[in-house]
Each structure stands twice: as structure tokens, then as C-alpha cells.
Length: 214
Image (tube, rainbow, N blue to C red; front, side, top):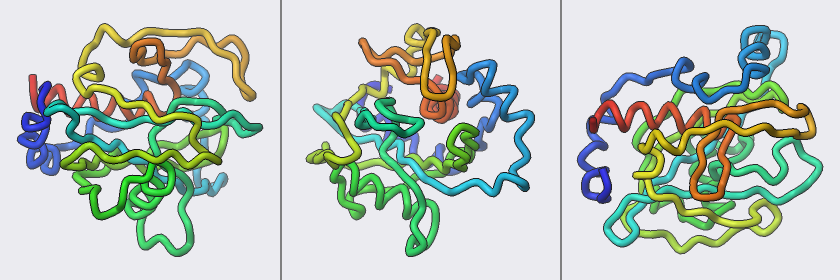
């Protein structure tokens, strides 16, 4: 599945497919995250809502997707590699619109250029108490990316073929504002490490793409 045309052929199958679900996401979770998710009672926590976008697009006839590096701040996800996305606003009609709006705000892709294909399995994020809704969408041409300077340090374009490559899965020991010296599974895209919630959601989409295009 190297060309964008190959990806477009999978779109109808993706729309009709069954989600791999939490089991696929947990393959890329740290042990501490597994314990937190098992202990979490969402009824008592009343999580905030957010949405992110896994946006696939054509670049030189090949399939790429976009990630961002968040600006460094005092937040729990400061400096991390992530999907474009953010919290739900009261004026958003649904979670999909939140993902579309945030993708426009953070990387400059107009809403009308994004065609939503499907929703992934919602994922609860214990450190920030967010329920994150992910969406797969595509743009038929390479967008003109414009980073939101207050939120995005840089925009990262990744060939979709790299995601399908099992050799990029590794593990790294990290320390953050909420954990110290923890070994976590990750994707290594060149020298870029993608871990945590983004890796978990990516892994569900990876399962689907590989199952539909073995």
C-alpha cells in the first residue's frame, strides 16, 4: 500500500470494517497505563472530551499522514508528537467536527478538504482525564500546512508505508511530568519517537490497514 491510489481503494472497506478496539491500542501501552486503565472508573471521573485526526493525503502519488510536535509548556503532553486535535467546544456539533476544526486550526487544512472515513475506538487518557475520539480522514492533494504557532512547534509528514512496517516498533525509557524512568512501546519514524496515546491510536489503524491489505 505505497500509493495514494492504493489507499483510496481501501476506503470503502475501512468504512465497513470492524474496529480492532482497545486490545490493539493496548499493544502500545506502558505497563503503568494498563494498570491505570483497569482501575479507572469513568463514571466518577467525568472525563473531558477531545478529538484528533489521522489525516492521510497524497504526496508525490504516495500516501502520507501528518503528525505534529507540540510546543514545550507546563502541560502534561508538552513537546510530544501527536495527531492534530484538541478539546471539544460547546459549539461543536459532534466529535468528528471537533477533529476537523482542530486540524484546520493547528495545521491549516481547511475543513472542506478533509473527508472523514471512520472513527476509531475512543481512548481514555488518565493523566489529563480526557476521553479522546480519533478519526481517519483523507485529503486528495497535499495540503499547504500552516502550523498554529501557539500550539505546534513543527509539522511532521510520515509515509503511510512506514506505519505498516513492523520493524519500526521499539521501546524507550522516558521520564515526563507525571512518570519517571518508565519503559514504553513506541513507533520510531526515522529519529522521531511516537508513544503514549498517539501510538495506541495509531496501532489500531495500523491493524485495520494491514488486515485489509495483507
